[in-house]
Image 1: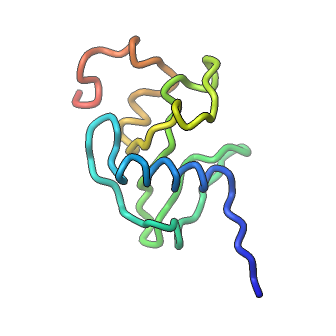
Image 2 (image 1 turned 90 degrees about the vertical axis):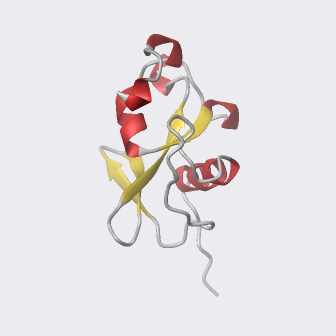
Length: 106
């Protein structure tokens, strides 16, 4: 019998995505739906998880820290939201209060 162990980053993504309905919490864009996360490969760069890639090569979802870890944020579920590539890249390590209104649409 084979036991599959899910990485903490993948578990956070799946839990956050299920809570957020597989929709970007910032812009409302529907993201690829994969209830269990099967077939998702985690991408790493310099030891950090960058997100997940689906079998077709489409990078689809990030677990974003509302208060970035670099600014004292934690991995607590209340500080995590599902984010698309566009919104995650635009927000960066800033707080929402530091961004202009409707920053995701610019």
